[in-house]
Image 1 (cartoon, rainbow, N blue to C red):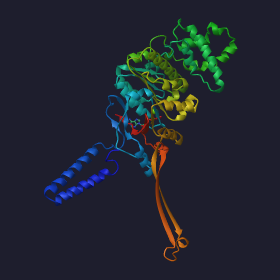
Image 2: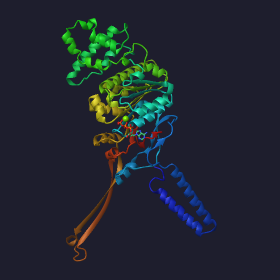
Image 3: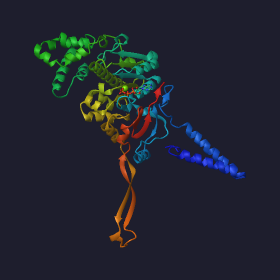
Image 4: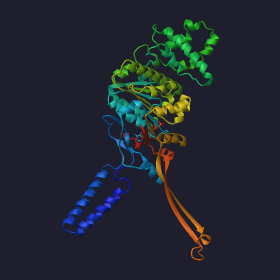
Length: 482
Ligand SMILES: Nc1ncnc2c1ncn2[C@@H]1O[C@H](COP(=O)(O)OP(=O)(O)OP(=O)(O)O)[C@@H](O)[C@H]1O
Ligand SMILES: [Mg+2]
């Protein structure tokens, strides 16, 4: 808290006016002392006004470039005093804002951005992407929905380093083979099987699918390029000998989960036999790969491609780590993480620490993560493994509670007042004078109270957020870039 928060500035102004009046009435040393006092007070006020919070939207003219950290907007640290004021007044406390920085050394412990639709998640993602691009790092952006402004500004910032993969616009897209890079041929089957449903009755079909893809991939390995198209031919259209021997009807039944998947992934964009986008190229060339998936046009396909790309990237980062660090950090930005996360990928969040990978993901609600990962416990793991959680307005009490619990509790002073009136006739023995006695009381005690009450999270204005950064709580807001 700065000294001028609250009403301190008004008190200083009143003191300055008094000093001026005193200077006018006195003479000699007293006059000069009063004048000096008034001048000092005025200077203090001018200084404090210069750093006062601007009203309305926050705008930045250029992408901030800071040594040792990335800017996430402006705001203030939220501690016990702010919680106390919030509890007492019933309004979220406001303080003078300063620039909020996330230090570089916590970035490989990942950032999760949560908030309901239209609250500023993509704008914050953009601010971070543009800073990563400006630093010259390798950047991968997965945009399932296709945000025009985001694409335009990232493309302009990346210049010659920009690599664009777009399912809805194949004419302007690079090609990308998500199976082109693997160390062990089993990885190919793992990646495809991760896209098959696994809940309840579907699990045996996922296992059949794995087996079929593994046979086909083993037959292709070393003979032909490993692509989705070649895999489909070897697995379904003209099954390799290991599969062709099986009774046709039984085989088709076991392959039933694979058929719709292969048809979703049949775009020629995804099966180049050589060249195209590669994570190694992005890493070495410090490129900016932008994957625009158009989930509005075909959700299933967009989600399958994004999942494959993430698993491929996970494999690359693991291999890079095993053979020594790469040339620098790789940033992975995922808008709408709920559309693309798999249980297999969520493990990257907890295990990739120290591998030089920085993941920033956006989700609308924790329920999205839960649906994508199949259980609340796994969704909780993803939340827990993110060192930084940035919470924009939550759509309802349930999500707000999740953040509120994460922020923890503090001791807050609770004041209770009481008034009691009682007839005094019997107790006091006085007859006429005081027939009634009034008793007033005020007591205060310290109680554990949510540092960030859930209602404060459901009432956040657009572009405003609470953030938990390594155990500290911040209240901030995102600037818009001109
Ligand atoms: N440059 C801009 N100036 C003013 N308002 C903007 C600007 N860009 C976006 N907005 C508005 O800001 C709000 C937040 O936008 P943003 O795209 O970041 O939301 P979001 O949290 O990503 O939502 P969704 O989950 O729907 O993608 C939207 O209402 C949008 O219309
Ligand atoms: Mg968005």
